[in-house]
Amino acid sequence: MSTRPPRQAPTPLHSVSVAGAVVRGDGRLLAIRRADNGAWEPPGGVLELAETLEDGVRREVYEGTGIEVSVERLTGVYRNTARGVVALVFRCRPEGGGERLSEESTAVAWLTPQEVGERMGKVYAVRLLDALRGDALPRVRAHDGRTLIGVPPAG
Image 1 (cartoon, helix red, strand yellow):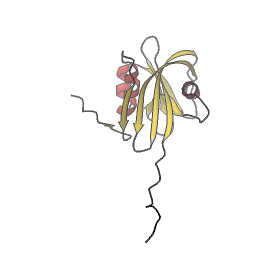
Image 2 (cartoon, rainbow, N blue to C red):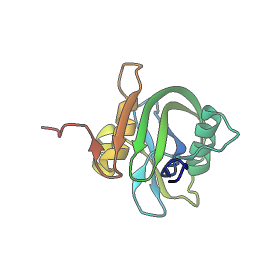
Image 3 (cartoon, rainbow, N blue to C red):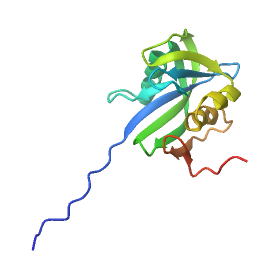
Image 4 (cartoon, rainbow, N blue to C red):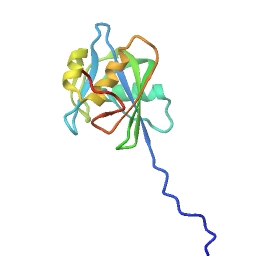
């Protein structure tokens, strides 16, 4: 009879990403069309180990769009259950720079909330639309990469 404890499955790893919900004074939102898949998304990416959340947001937005931002507040936490990614989205205000493409983007645009809903998949559009909400409470949502989990269908 073995005295070894039963073997446990390895703990799944998650990565942390940050994204900017950059809102201009006219209410338009900054978005990129990704070079790898052609999808429209908020600018963002993987948080580096030694940087603060705010520094990561500023870096990712600038690298992806050329826009310098100030970070205002956390507006949502979004978990992709299929890929093990937790994305922290921060509402930001543009402070300088100018739109430019990067290795990660084929287009940079300032979209109206309606255009966000038309161009983006729901799991990314909700990140920008949550940032427009008047309350200061961050939303916590999960999705499988395509569909929000635990959210009733609109209608």
